[in-house]
Image 1 (cartoon, one colour):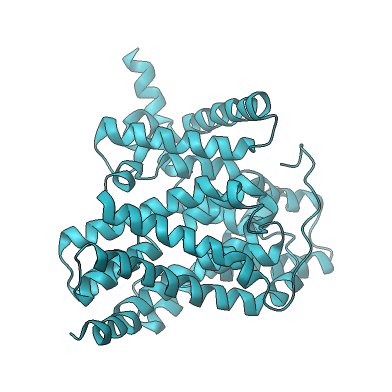
Image 2 (cartoon, chains in turn green, blue):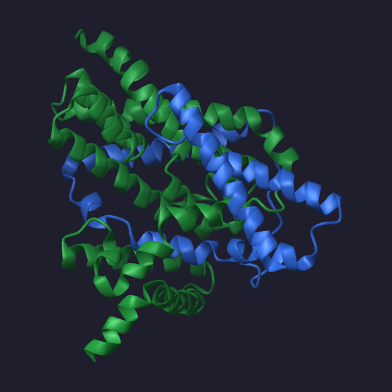
Length: 254
Length: 130
């Protein structure tokens, strides 16, 4: 028995293909039987993945979900940023470049607006909970953008570690919510064409959230959303410790 | 050969993330700016050129399409790696900030998508394509 477990651990990535294959099969069955196909199989699979991540996190106390369990370490390779980005890039194959040009203005606007709105919402929430100094407000605002922008902003400005942890939690929650919520709100926000997908990618910004959310909604929209989302974290890291911090400093009066 | 497609995809990926890193350095940000986006544009341009030159046979194409088909399973694996425990353990500030930012930004999608004219929805998906 231990030999077998050892062997599986040695073949982690191969085992991950089996595990994810089983999750996909189960999800499509559940989607067909319980929702008559209304909730995409891929959406169900992502929810199951998040549930497993929660279980993995509870069992191991680690920060990488299911892949912290040694037996499932291969999931970490399969779902890590290297293969994820390769797969995202591959979805661009066959994309109509005219669609991207046509939606260029909306895409740029969505980025600026998405970053600004997240910062504002995060900063207002922070202030209403008593974090009224500009550094904490900018850090939590950054977290409301993505879980990378928050700590980058906080580290640059010298925020306390508990505020940085809060910003990471806010960003992680946003990523999870975007993954789960997108297929449900897609009909309400008209997320059904390349242009709205580009607007969505720029507004939401979280790469994992957008990647998961669009996968669960309509795979054909993935390249358009990913195209704008890929600029979001970088721009957020640029604007957080500079423009937004100075803006907040003006408002809070130092 | 299939590997030609995979190699072209991988090369575009690498050149893209290198460009994104350089742009990040240029802007003074400790983060990649648009690397995946550059890689995607590059792949579109490169495969288009190859197709026109008659150097993109179906087998080569398969090397790209395989990874495209693996996208959803990879995203499911990605979901299983998320730090969901930390996401839920942030307390009220993190929860309100995360939920608030998500809701406000989602609500803006139709507004921004209207800039420069509304677009028609994609045709419905065949079940086997999903």
